[in-house]
Length: 360
Image (tube, rainbow, N blue to C red; front, side, top):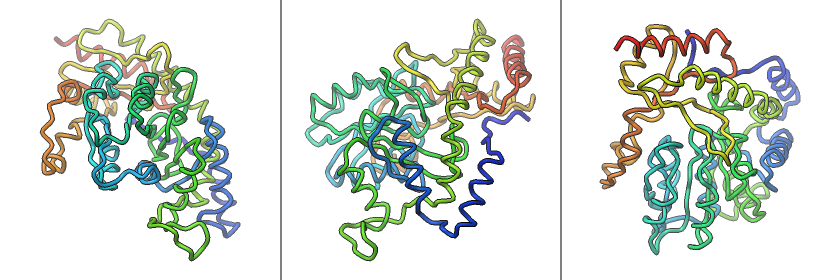
């Protein structure tokens, strides 16, 4: 079976974890600080705060900026549900703006239409590893005095206009096992604002800077040194992983080019796509996925239901019409692109896809 995703963990990660276990310092400690410094340097940010998930990073970023009840945050309906849920956790209201049809990222023109006196922030998602249009988004934010929080959970190392994502506003990254790098589970907040960084670190640790002195309401959302040790090794491998993903994507796009019924992903000229997912638009999507499964090729649908159509959001009264997002849910299919794929694997994916559409 060719899996849709596969974490690449080796002896280096095992040795790093063993070192931490032998040290006796397995909760948040020096390895977390070392990982934060390395990740902030990698993204070009002054500060980073390690947490226990990408969802926590989003939640804490919003809280650190003071987002709460009566506030509105404009975001994408086409993402994993944690993007919008993190807004709900603060008591604020997610407001959905439709997406671009080619990148699947939030459409800046649609953002402008959604701004109200209650709007406090824009939360773009760099989906599948392709950056959102940060030039336009930052201009809108500046003109309207809005906060920008980047959901970069799928886009480690991606760039827009020569800057890494997560460095335009306050960034949130995930290190879930299937991401471009992993800590087994974990997340990271990035920022150039010292006050936001300090608040984030307090929020993740029960609202405390000094043990047993709690200055604000916080949570237990810390990263362990075990996870950080894995993250340090994975961060050192990230650029290599990315280069392989990009090469694999080139091979797939070249092989799928010209197949009627398939639209391969694009990468805009001012962007670096890191291909967390290689997502095509496919006619007869579900039939293609079933056919590839018979050929022992894994696929994924990211995402089959827009967030505003999820039952929990319907119960909250969401009745938006977001046609570009809704159309994407019916057509997108992710094919394997991860660094563990062989040339033979890639050829099998291309040939099986060609075979499916040749049947018609």
